[in-house]
Image 1 (cartoon, one colour):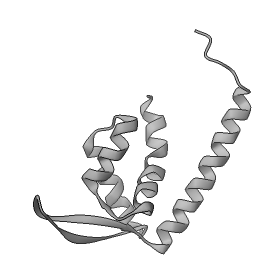
Image 2 (image 1 turned 180 degrees about the vertical axis):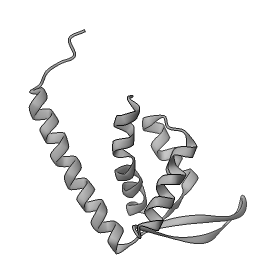
Image 3 (image 1 turned 30 degrees about the vertical axis):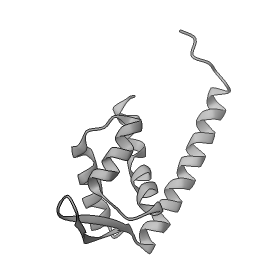
Length: 107
């Protein structure tokens, strides 16, 4: 998949995962990697940016497999941004589908 297409949806996917339940960076990476085949280093700058912008908060939680993990949780501000991104995605998707008009790949 084209890298620019991936970049365009990563924030939305991160929000979607964290909106369902608090989670840590590697778990977010694994969930997205299953679908988009990304590198682990892609996720951490996004998470730092979202924390800095006030969309996410963090807290430490003990782990049975080593040191405590940094968990991410969505803030009220983040929920509003997530909703806005979902609306943008829906509008974008509908516009593209309309423009393609059911065109099939003719290779």
